Structure formats: C-alpha cells, structure tokens
Length: 437
Ligand SMILES: NC(=O)C1=CN([C@@H]2O[C@H](COP(=O)(O)OP(=O)(O)OC[C@H]3O[C@@H](n4cnc5c(N)ncnc54)[C@H](OP(=O)(O)O)[C@@H]3O)[C@@H](O)[C@H]2O)C=CC1
Ligand SMILES: O=C(O)C(=O)Cc1ccc(O)cc1
Image (cartoon, rainbow, N blue to C red; front, top):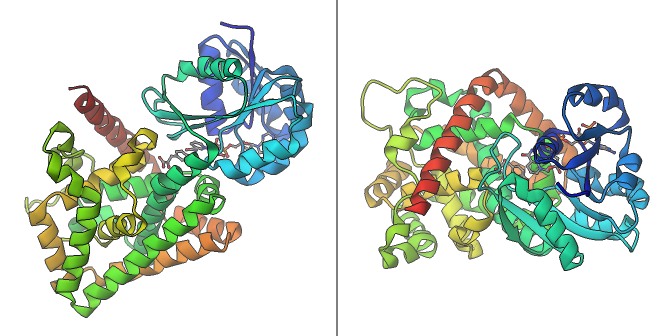
C-alpha cells in the first residue's frame, strides 16, 4: 500500500472497525483512545499487523497523514481543540461523527490553516458489513489530490461513495436517521411504559411487527450518545422530530374522536404525496421493498397458531408518512444516502401504504377497535417527550430516558441482536439482488 499513515482518534466501535479494515488492506494505522484505555488497546491490537497504538491524540496527529476523529459528537469540539494544533503540517483531517455542522465548525476553529479537511460518515453501524453501504465523503477544504487519496484509503471498505457538502449531509440524515430513530425510540418507550415485551404478546408477533421489535431493540442495545448526538446536534433534526410528534398526536386525536372520513382523507393525501409517483410508473422499481415471507422470518417470539394476522392501526407508520407529506419529503430521494434501518423503515411503511386492503383495514381498526388505545396513548406521550428533549437540546435528559428503557429491554439484547443482524443481512441481500436484476 501507499506510504500514507492513517490516524484514528477514538477507538470505540467505529474506530476499531475502521482500524481493522484499513490495516488488513495494508495501510499503516496510528490509533489512540483516552489514555486510560492505552494498555487494553495495546493488548487488543498486539497481534494486528500495521497498527500502532499511542497514548493520546497528540502522538497520532503529529505522525499521521489522514486523521479521522471517531469520538462522540458531543465531544468533538473539545477533542479537536486538544489535538488539532498538533496535526502534522499539510495533513488531511476528517471525522466520523454522525452530524457534520459541529464537526466542521470544530475543524475550522482549531485546525491550523495548512491542514486540509475531508470528512466521512459510514451510514451503518459497526456490526454491518460496509460493502455496498453508502459512505458519505465531504471535500470541505482540500485539493483534488488529497480528496483522491482519502477515496483511495477508504476504498478498502468497499462502500458506495456519496459526495456531499456538510450541509446536504445534515439535511438528509435528519430525514433518514433522526426521525426514524424517534419513531423506534417511542415504540420502545410505550412498550416499557405498559410493561410489555411485545414479542410475548401473540397479537404483536409476525410481519411488520417483527421489524418494529427487532429494530427497536437494536437501537436500545446501542449507545445513547450516537442517537442523542445525531438528533440534538443536527439543527434540521429538531423540525423533523417535532413534525413526527405532531403527526402522531393529530392522527391519534382523529382516531379517538372517531373521525373516519377526516382520517381517511388525510391518510390518502399523505399516501398520494409519498407513494403516488410509483403508481404512475408501473416499472420494476415499483416492486415492494419487502414481502410477507421475508418479514415473517425474523421473530423473537412464537408465531400464533392461527394464520390470521392480528389487526393493528399502525399509528407509528401512518404518522411517518403524514410527517413526510407535511415536510415535503420524498423518502426515495434519499436512498443513495440511507442506512439499513431507514430502508427497513421505508420498507414497512411502503408495505402498508401500497396495499389498499391493508390500509383500509388499518383505518377500520383505528376507528373501531379499542384494543390498542392504551398503547397508542403511551406512544403519543413518548413521541412528544422525545421531541421535547431533542428541542430543548437536553443531552442529560435524553441519556437518562434512553438508559432507563435500555435497562428494561437489556435481558433480550443478545437474542435480538442475533435475529436483527440476520434480518438486516437477508433483507439487504434481497434488496441488492433486486437492484441487479
Ligand atoms: N455506532 C454507530 O452505529 C455509528 C457511529 N457513528 C459516529 O461515530 C462516532 C463514534 O461512534 P462509536 O464508535 O459508536 O462510539 P464509541 O463510544 O464506541 O467510541 C467513541 C470513543 O472515543 C473515545 N474518546 C472520547 N474522547 C476521546 C479523546 N479525547 N481521545 C481519544 N478518544 C476519545 C471514547 O472514549 P470514552 O468512552 O472514554 O469517552 C470512545 O472510546 C460517533 O460520533 C458516532 O456518532 C457513525 C456511524 C455509525
Ligand atoms: O442505521 C441506523 O440508523 C443506525 O442506527 C446505525 C447508525 C448510527 C449512527 C450513524 O451515524 C450511522 C448508522
């Protein structure tokens, strides 16, 4: 490989994943975490060729040609302030944080002027194979040659390079990530509030419900700071999450009031705005992202004996499409820059909205069936509460709530991660083979 040394500051899940893949591809990697983890990191990487662990970011910065900050978004300013001035003259610096506005601001504030800036963002978690997944690259302050070098270095991930500005990145990820997480966080909050493990209740098992359960558990098994950072530090995210909470509230009020025609008309307008273009095309691309057989395969619980699907009003999905409509978002426009969770989320909303019989059933259920009222009430409270914590920029409040619910679901994480990984892998393979054919 070339002579360039890659520096990684922050050896958490993402930093380690990058270090392993880059070093396997033959790049020399200089890495560090906080000084307390020096010994354990040295131990972890003692047999890994091409990797050298350093005590802190000064040593990494002064000796590396492309330095990637892979730390918590909320710490980015302090960490760049500490190590940025030690950057090797003429080196390139980037970051892996999920929200670029604060990262770029920190680079501009603290890096010497001779240092170039090319940032990145892998749009998947550390446990997902990066091959074929989108990797956003941001040429913020760099020559073409430096940008080419970064592309060459990161090409070993096998990801799809998506070139954006920092601003475009934040607007798209607010649509794809922040609001998607808000929906799943709210589902988990409602289940915990009602003391449910949804896979243990027969009416929750199967199809769309499997995706809801697996993704919710996947999110809660992760670190709070990832989700807090990308929601609270991204200025566009607040508006999306707030609209989602408003859509949930307004639709729930229509259901409670028994306003069938109004509910129906509103859902139809949202459907037209988000999925209407597909009806007009009639080509292969309009095939559904997900199907029954695929959706039914990944369950944490036993499927009930009776084949009959249990009705649900799917408030969380109705509100998502309502929210996209109100904000003028066409989610398919963001596919090039989407995460596996977003594709699954879009997959299940599409599954509902492009099936007229199912959508009619959902409306009937919403108006006539009281079985879900308690769940929907808690879900509505939850969506609003998450939105408020995000709007107030309340990191501590976010952490407290997240960790409380996390501990409720904790006993099932091991199994859920296994099933969730398998689900993502299979569904992604299915999507890929469809794109090829
Ligand atoms: N997890 C995911 O799915 C994805 C995350 N990201 C983004 O990547 C970044 C890293 O995420 P992830 O790896 O999951 O998080 P982790 O918490 O696993 O890793 C961050 C690491 O940075 C360390 N760190 C903090 N301050 C310093 C410092 N001054 N010097 C050196 N190391 C430091 C942390 O130590 P300590 O714990 O002691 O603070 C921690 O080990 C985040 O910004 C996240 O938003 C991007 C794509 C996917
Ligand atoms: O797919 C998702 O939305 C995830 O939850 C994983 C994730 C988290 C943070 C990122 O910056 C990118 C991907």
